[in-house]
Image: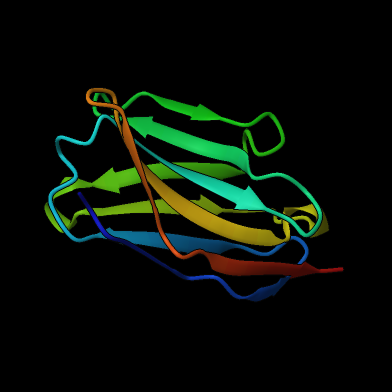
Length: 117
């Protein structure tokens, strides 16, 4: 079990940058996969970026080249660096922790990112 707390959401102009943080209540070293998801008004939640224990990362096509996910095991924190933000990046961003076996998922409460034109 783990509790996740996101922070860093804000109002920013298009073209700007933000860094989101996800602080975990326990060590993240053994969590198989951590990730960032987002949900815009009227839309389904979608995957933004994933990072695995191996360090392998995966990104949604819409954010490739602009967003970077990273993890600091010593601080039990996962980050999402977001550059060249677009209006369409506006959403609530959620942190996720996933174990492969037994399969389990935990979510944070979300942090609002608003990008203005």
